[in-house]
Length: 205
Image (cartoon, rainbow, N blue to C red; front, side, top):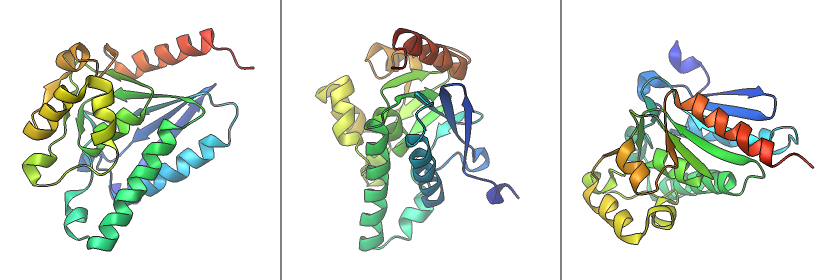
């Protein structure tokens, strides 16, 4: 069954690692299982000196759909705090990674998924990418660092508007406001090309 398979798949080619969220039948939720697998995968990559770039991407038309709402509904105050801290810890480890981190945003990038992308050094998007922080429409707010990182990337006013309205924006607007640095298809190939260029200009010591 699909749920018996890993929630993430990691592929390493030369100095580039690709972490792919691989639950498309569930819209790639950042569930507890996914976060735990992501944390383990990042820990293993942190020990590898040969891996110098990490690319995060999704599957089909979804980068990731954020936290699993059904899981959130079952959390009490203690478990909700622990879940929030888990996401914060993982995304901060991405922000602090010794490798260059790139989000190759292939489709829908919602809520916590946008927090993940914001933790990366570079974001590139497919022409079909869609971004949103829908928490306001659900009566919740992200707890994984987006409220801090989004204003730093696109400015306080634009970030506040996106948080307050929960509206969706496409890749063209994302590029115009500086949320992503490039748009192109196929986006993973574009991200790989960016990684190769960065590695070329920053050879290993």
